[in-house]
Amino acid sequence: MMKRLRLFGLLMAAAVLFGGVESAQNDEPEFAAELTGVAEVPGPGDLDGSGSVTIRLNKVNAEACFEIAVEGIDPATAAHIHEAPEDKAGPVVVTLMPSPEDEEGESECVSVNPLLIERMVMNPSNFYVNVHNEKFPDGAIRGQLSMVKDD
Image 1 (cartoon, rainbow, N blue to C red):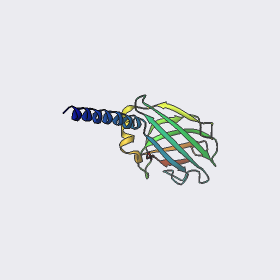
Image 2: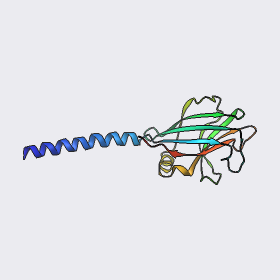
Image 3: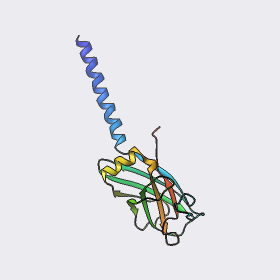
Image 4: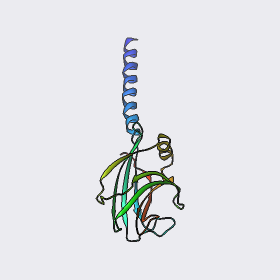
């Protein structure tokens, strides 16, 4: 009987330990998107432009840390996360960069409403990132977010 209790105790401890690791990983879901001018709605955006974005949401600190890299567009004036499906334009829900100057992908963090984080986790493809510039004030390049799966 004592061996069974010890084994049960060890199994419970392992479940808590590994469950905690899983929970910690889920506290920082990661999203990515490829950005193009063709994807802009209404479009077109800058057809010569392209880019990528990676966003890691931190549920505990209620923030989004991101890296954006762009090329083939005039200097960016802003970058946002919007809420809308692929074929629609939607409202800004997070201002990533009011005036991004680093086109090499510098990482930054901004505050995000915890309820918005939950919506993004539940349906990431209903959110997109776009980058604006003077020539394309409604958006030069855009990409729908998708969740990055851990290997």
